[in-house]
Image (cartoon, rainbow, N blue to C red; front, side):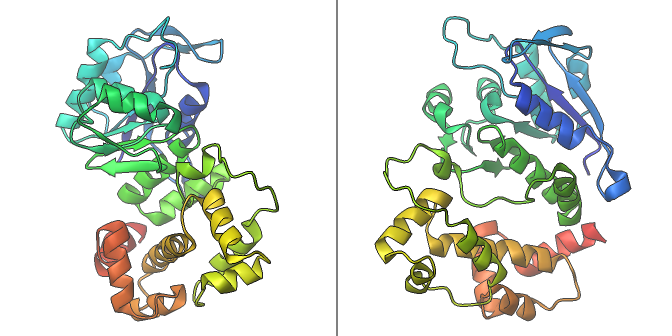
Length: 321
């Protein structure tokens, strides 16, 4: 169980990502069903830490805060200024390695992945960062499998996130994994963010398709509300009043994936919520989310989450209760 969290900032720290760490882990939310953590913002050289926003943040704690932390967060920092590159101290990299070696979670927010790369923690792992930095990260960690299309990646107890707001997604994933879905949703409600977003970074990359037109947001909301129905591409295209070809192209542009893959992920996500309540039979969960049978639900659970509905329920229903 997560109790102590230390977030490390260095010169050139990104204010927004620093704020994510403080917002998710630094606020006592027990009054609304959320958690409370022993949270510390720390830095290799305590004092005034200049940020990428042009102002400084006073950080009084040093790296000793990481020594017994259950989670160590490597906050994003400026990696684009080749004229004045940020030199990560050996002490910082050693602190990350020691945290990982003793079984703590090591989490990077956006370009914080470069600290993990410098510490050697990405070797042989799948990971991500902001799509703008993906090629640079692949060069910095040639033994890593850098995926520029996802919002976050958990490989073992190393969790890397994509750009900016994807850090929220990663942190909520960590809460769900360690503390259960109810806790993650309680934090998300207080932050007024979705507990689990769809798609990946591809939807945020500049799209060369010159189409404008209205968003599919209304259709996506309708699909979420009718997961039990059979949604074919022709039927969805008709509902969106688009040709099938235009619909498929626009769907990928807005979600980063295909209608079938998006729908499957939505059904799995809804099944996760239902399985956290032990009074709904697995067969009924499968019917309610549109998979039809427990066998189909098990297939997609194994493919998407690497576990079974029963194992997931055992893990998260117990936590939630």
